[in-house]
Amino acid sequence: AERRPAMNIYVGNLPFDATESDLRSLFADYGTITSASVITDRDTGRSRGFGVVELGDAELAGKAISQLNGNDLNGRQLTVNEARPRATRS
Image 1 (cartoon, one colour):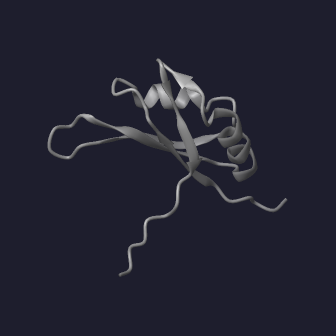
Image 2 (tube, rainbow, N blue to C red):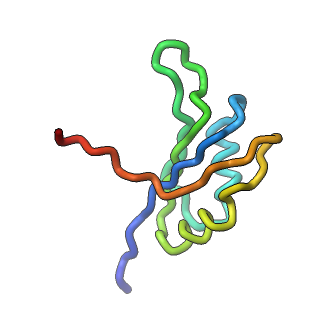
Image 3 (tube, one colour):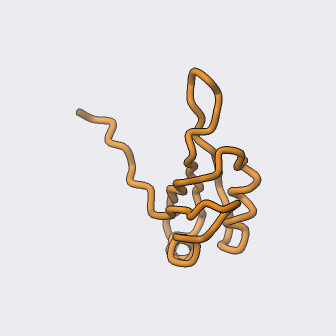
């Protein structure tokens, strides 16, 4: 069987107290989570209010995006979409 690519998902408008395990439980129904991280400020260590989750199956990731985008987490409406790779070359 052909391996489908993994997909990185951007999760924005996270409550500032959301943790990596919150992200993992949000996406638990959508296949294998290869990584999950809440992005923190380098200086303060505090959450910057968004995270990135990598799902092992792009098709399930697409389903996660359509079902979780706009969902409420602790009173905040999540922004969930495909994370665009950041360009490293200038």
